[in-house]
Image 1 (cartoon, rainbow, N blue to C red):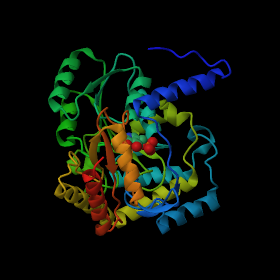
Image 2: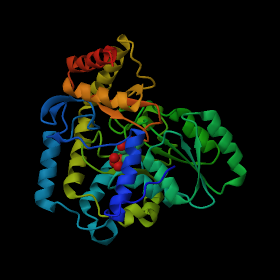
Image 3: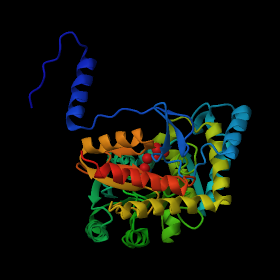
Image 4: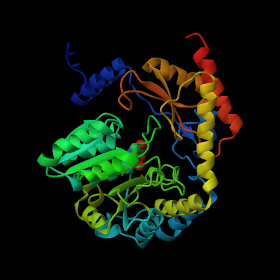
Length: 400
Ligand SMILES: Cc1ncc(COP(=O)(O)O)c(C=O)c1O
């Protein structure tokens, strides 16, 4: 590689930034942030124009639900806008403990512990469980926060091919005699493909070989399972999952995350998860919003049912146009295009037609599998779903 000479009139930081950004542009993965104006709703303004939003994680449309907003406003008035510190110093409010109790009751676990984000949960939990001499077996499509948690833990990371139970069993067999401790990590829903992990087989398999099991169900929480408890409920493995992570910032329309499991898991995390110990606690309005959203989600199963019905409709309508959305079975519906530039150009053309559907490129997905990631909401109307599918079909059929 030919290294550019630093420009003499630029600071080291400016040189570094321009060199790195130049390389990112050359790879076709330069990103910029789009400005959305208003609440995350099926119909909203993006870049000054009215669009249908198919690019969010507010799946159940709860982030601006009147009860959720009212709960957050009341909490801001009564408790203020900040917890004011970390939970172990001065930020442990009774509000946090109440939310955690309600989440544990909902999930049927002994305990839960709230984290400020799902990212913070994964990078905190994994190093609290494993370290040097241990092994993490992680699905190839595990979220970046799982990968970063593994890196921080200093445990050896072994990646098994996506959802490949035979490869997982081979690794478990091999490690049974040699590793001090084995942690198996999988997502409940894979966030860029919309498929679910084969938990009904994966969880008992890992347990049979004496591994600890962590399931990141960021996108399953509230959206799947008979009562919204996610992929773990869907697969009927509630009793076997050791550590259950879910987010409050997606279907539950607030912010933050929880880790659920036994009392001793909670006690361990309070004492050993650095992202919990050394970080400010969730703010009262976020906690109150999550509590209210949990109540609404439980009282209104139609939201989850309509969400999945809308996703099914979108998949069927696209299939009718000959467009594959494999392997999606959930509210995350990918249309793989392949080429980065083509994907982003398609995204812009859809925006011009009034549809905001985000293009996703490497490193969020494997190279050459750039895609539109479509996420309908529970409150999209059937004709809006159809219009999106028809617009994608029309754009894909148009000459490049
Ligand atoms: C599978 C998965 N895990 C964890 C996270 C991180 O959650 P958060 O956005 O709350 O940090 C995400 C976020 O997109 C995710 O998709």
